[in-house]
Length: 296
Image (tube, rainbow, N blue to C red; front, side, top):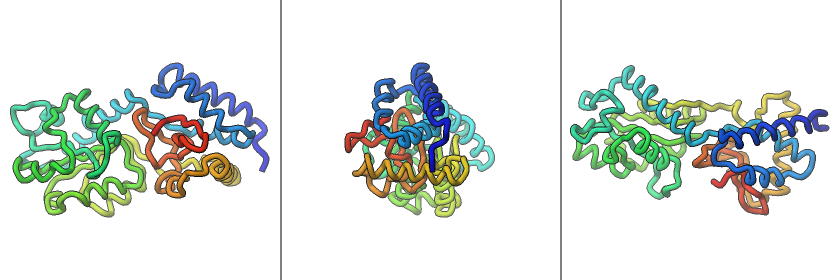
């Protein structure tokens, strides 16, 4: 089908908006040079129209926004969960203030949602760093899953709060959970608190672990897929066709597993510190002569 008559004006207005977001440091972490190089990946009119649609759908969370989300999740959402579903009696109240003191063990641990072989660039590590620096939580109360056994067995901890930046399909958390002692977790009070969660993850985790409480700031669903652009079905289908053509023509080494984002979620979601693999590879791919908008 032909492109919309006003697509060039649309592309221009989106470009101006994005440059303003970079200039005003709302898209902190993305430089104008980086942005302009990425725009040059798109050469034909169809590709330029697709580029405008991608940028129009992009959700970006800067470091300051991420920290604000983290504070909101801890101060409001987790506290509300504690109020509605009280943790074990040995867990100290006044959360998270109780995690700032070395005097009395609050019998609560913040657990970074990491698998055994995960490296230091994973989002959960970044969340742990922000919690230490911005919420002043003591290091001893922030642990990795490998330390749950010691906290449970030797320190009598029965309240564990797993944190991450995003949960798309829920697979990472389920994998982390499976690597832990199931008897210990099943007899503990567990919260999973990613900043952002997709409904796919909510459904998977809730079905697998109905006793685990979920706390999050932002919930995504199928309407956040790029292939559900919110226009008439015919144009949505055209956008998907243009995207598939772009992948074949210019991102040939992208694996089928992430072509539409892991789990086929089709997200266009970025943190300043990371790009989730549920997002489309046009944002971060750095092979085949493709200039990434963001380095994953």
